[in-house]
Amino acid sequence: MKRKLIAMFSCVALAAASIAGCSSSKPAESAAAPAETTKAAEGSEAAAPSGDIKIALITMDSIDQHWVTLNEGAQKAAAELGVTVTFMSPNTKDDAQQIECVNNAVAGGYQAIVVAANGPDAISSALKEAAGAGVKLVYVDSPANVDAEATFSTDNEAAGKTAGEEMIKALEAAGITSGKIGIVNVNAATDSTVKREKGFRSAFEGKG
Image (tube, rainbow, N blue to C red):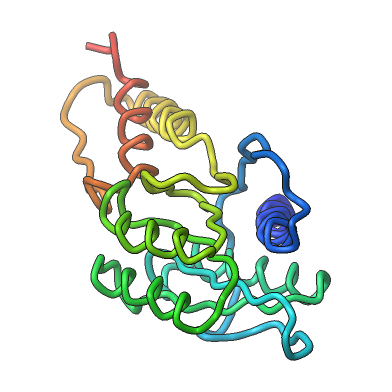
């Protein structure tokens, strides 16, 4: 939880700094911790004086606990930095809804968008238009194929491999050394889940 909040603080701080013209180069990627259970309201904002920096947080949906936790971290960072962060994500993982959120952020005068893209190309056109309008982009967890100030994410392939290794240990402890494992992924186009599955499968290579 603490690492996730720190990562989101860095993410929001970078977005704010890029708006203020304080960011002259792209920093290295920063890893976020796994999600933990918290509560935050959709559309919640951290108050800031009128005319201050406004940042839109657009994740894949507004109900997955992972994104709810990210929003909590963003709101805490916003309160400390004195900026406004609005959680304006779709109700479900839907490309059209996420594009609408991006367009609404641009139309609403937000100077930066922190976004977890549904896929590398799914919302690229909308993000290009946003960047063309002067909006700063920062990716969290899942980037798109559009240049941004930075990307903050877990090493998803390594995380997937760790999950696979732990499953192997559990199976061996139960005396199971052969059989089939089903993988139910979230989205075949989402960068983070593609890498997690790749890492998970790699743990079983050479296991027979």
